[in-house]
Length: 76
Image 1 (tube, rainbow, N blue to C red):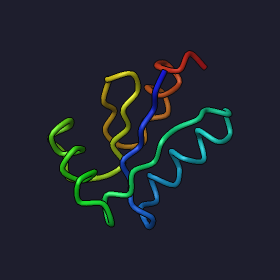
Image 2 (cartoon, rainbow, N blue to C red):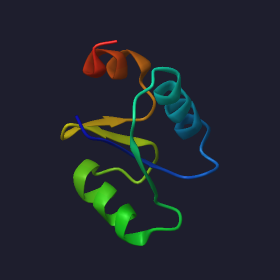
Image 3 (cartoon, rainbow, N blue to C red):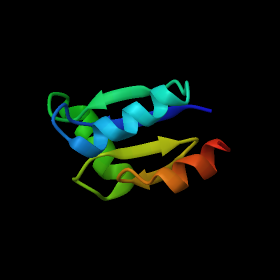
């Protein structure tokens, strides 16, 4: 199941989400919306949000770092 996290380097919730994925050995693709304007536009189009993190799991969008939702989607 493909996972993409739209993030910025200084966002504390983005860091928490990436640490969560690492802790659970979940692979993901990171798109830094602070330096990649195309990724930023893609994130806004998919989520309607300008804030990060925006996490896409198998075409489902999670806004922010929501550990309960992530565990549910990933069946952890």
